[in-house]
Length: 75
Image (cartoon, rainbow, N blue to C red):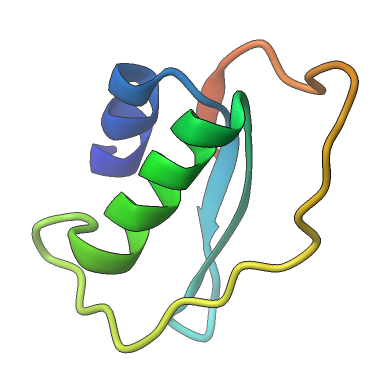
């Protein structure tokens, strides 16, 4: 919920999902500066009850159009 709120404040789209391993996976799309802001928030702040041991961002690429119209939580 906090990640979804922060994504909307920053202005990125995509999704996040908690995994059965206690980690979080997802996809973030938007202008590079906004994606970088979201990555920083995910790495340093996160949800109030989260413990961030490390972050791993992969598959970064430039896209011509967004695949999502909003940011959501997947279950």
